[in-house]
Length: 244
Image (cartoon, rainbow, N blue to C red; front, side, top):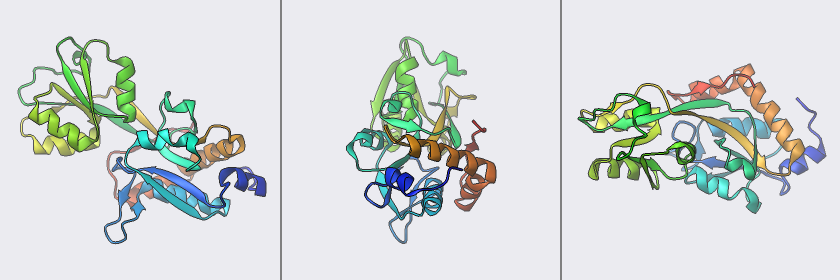
């Protein structure tokens, strides 16, 4: 790891505190502590360790979804963000390698004849997906024939999927497992249309901070810190990303 200097601290935290943006819609990586009302989870634990190594106090900045977090990257309101690494977001954020991956697939309604992910992108098929999720951005680039409908939030997406009889609900596999339990007869398709790369990042222009943050993420994977955070938070459904 690069030596931590006053110049590096200043680049990371121009206000004197390390302001960490968290995507609170990703229940695998973040949650709200019932007792304190404060953010907790895997991303929180990594942020606290980063702050400890830098010798900086951490100020948590929760956002309701990854789109809101990414949209604030150029507004000077956060210093490090934890969210899905997606090409469109890389215009404003320098991302680290991924620290975990999450499979994205489809939930099919009862009676659906579709058996394979490749069958979903067809004329006449209506897919609903949470707006501004990393996998929504992926589908917006890649879906050619089906109709893609975007809805704010996973809860709203599931409700519309059921009420309006959509042909497919796109989502993270762990979330779709809980949705499937609420809809008897529904099925989750095998495989994935993409694996969301969950990473950390800094706003564009902080070159030294970006380099240090990438080294931190690689060390967190190799040292077992990511695995410990997953275990400590009792999370199921995350795959630790391979070394970059």
